[in-house]
Image (cartoon, rainbow, N blue to C red):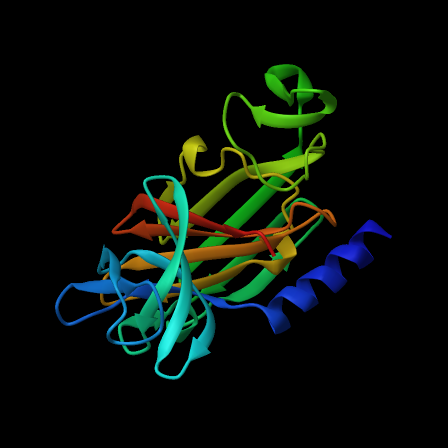
Length: 228
């Protein structure tokens, strides 16, 4: 039943929401405006490569969510100032099991692993006056459960390029629970040697999407989109 619910939610996500993109401007940055008109106030500037999550369009402007210094923000950018991650060549799933999925293109393999959440090795802070609601795990924000106790977690993400094996650091996976690894997508920008790895995740509450960036063999960043 849980797997069916996950499938339905992921189908809803993929057909109802936006897409991840990166800022891609000839000036190496983009102005973020308060509204989707040229005369609107500039509220931020984002450098090329910055993750954004594209929502609906307003004429030639796109409403976006983005992260700046750990804060989720929203604004508008002109619609030719970014590039969708999905525009880069995609990998295909080559192998899947309950706890692992592998995507492959040519001699490159990306594998994502999940495991059970081990409650005993974590610390919890609960919502004041609501002792059953978890506010923080290990003193950090978390995703995947709406105040509940996680049951599964991302265990490892690895990229194998020929004989070279790249493993994302634990910090890239912190706070990300209830993964749905079967939803994994991988796109590769061969010009900049950059991998984009993303999954849509949900247990029925606390739904979120996450994308990771690995550039020239080094983990660079992640972005979590949530609040659907």
